Figure 1: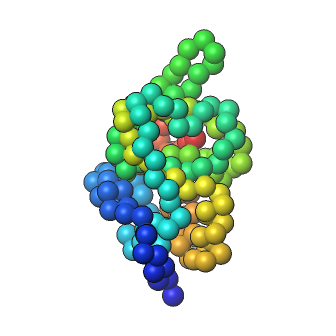
Figure 2 (figure 1 turned 30 degrees about the horizontal axis):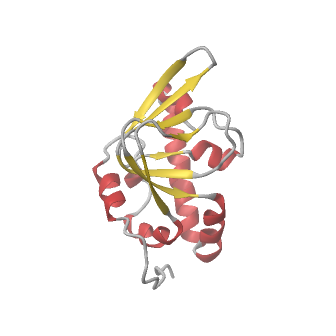
Figure 3 (figure 1 turned 60 degrees about the vertical axis):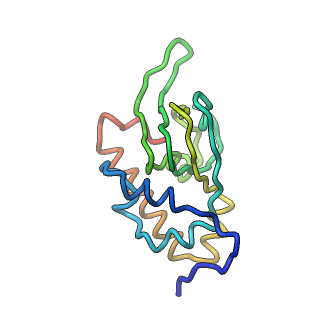
Length: 163
């Protein structure tokens, strides 16, 4: 049975959950991951505030961390050394980093704070720990991320924005 841990210092992800609920994009997590699973996921997430202009994900990087955006906006762009092409602006309640999280390949885009943001991260070690302790929650998250990737891949205007 899935029951959240009794961690007295459980991270407060209520702001993230509110952002996910408010997000009405086609690729929103609220369509694919049930709200009750977040109580368990909270123990595996880490929050960070990032200032405007900070690079969260660098094109070509191999870090596999997954990010959930609680507040602010993230700009997704690709560059070729000569210029940049903006692919998307992601708002609160979005997830980013899912492509490399699964593929183990280099990041294909840069993700930068468009303004001050609060993000929650899940690294591969955290996902592995989640998988061992709560396999059904890990599977539900993986399926939700897969659905989001498929939705983004079908949306031609955002096809390259799977980071």
